[in-house]
Length: 504
Image (cartoon, rainbow, N blue to C red; front, side):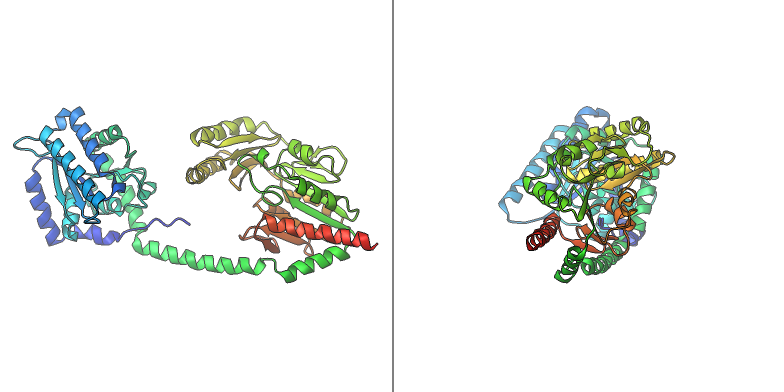
């Protein structure tokens, strides 16, 4: 789960009206006069981007001469790792840059940057939050950055503008702030100019949204949410562990297999028989897998069916010469033994021209993502993309697709690093019923690793054996940890067939 840490919103929000804070706010107003205040506060650390924001402020004064003597940057650097040589050097660089900017732009009546190297007590911190017109936070990398949340919590009258680095975790929650790239000083200067001229109505609109969000998800809610999910994970783990295939349940399956005369084996491909490749064509079957499947398929007692989301062309190329039945595109295409390919039902594909531009737009925005077009479905793959960006883009794409396809007879499915849009009513469970309708199997085994395989597990008769690959919630009877466990189990089945043939 994702648990963005909250703050004690009530404590900061109510501290503004205390006697100590009110006194310090009055002193600050008297000290700064009519000058607008931009606040920069961070501990001394390379990750905080303090030099970057100073350079951005310098560029602001270069480009916007009208702002000179009308804005002051307050820089509070909290001591950190005192005595460490590199940190002392960084402190010296910060102070030299501040001195240069003040010497370049300062006047007898105005100092552009006021600097303090010390930690502040709580009331002084709240007073600064409440007095500053802008908070400038530009970490180069930050897990959360609670200062951003504290600043918003203090703004009683709704005024104030938060400028926040996109590299801070808080940027995911505080999207109404001005989000910037901390490595781009032109962007920092532009954000400062925007913040200093933003109408009060717009400031209040943005801050109201962020305050409501922070008030709802405060530090207490965060702690409770974390502990509740931790407890839930423990319960889920107990359920999953109870389904994990043991030597005893494995022996039970093998005994049923040996005693059966008509067996149906329903096997998923990607993630079950082979590992995932960066692109679909990378996950070709090995020679060992081909020999294993051929051994199972050639046994006259077995009806072996490969069920996959892949194109029928891929399945035909790799397995078309074997004594297998094939199901492609999650059940849209079916090939029973040597018979030709047939569609499971009449299906339309004209909807693809409306969906494809949406997928293309998201693929263009995410380097590494690509679209796979099949006969009756479209798949948006993001396995080669940056993992964090891929997950975020996938969530956004799902939302867009759900809204867009509400009145179209298609369904949207999320698989392992893929989002697929296909015709409604097509799934592995419906396709497998064509075999189970014969109703003369005394052993049925289904193995799959994806949510698309849950339709298959639900369609099986009660006496069947169903196995989900991977430890997650499932309707399958049993679970195996990984793809190699599946291969070992299938090899054991093939060995039992060979032993039985030799004994005959």
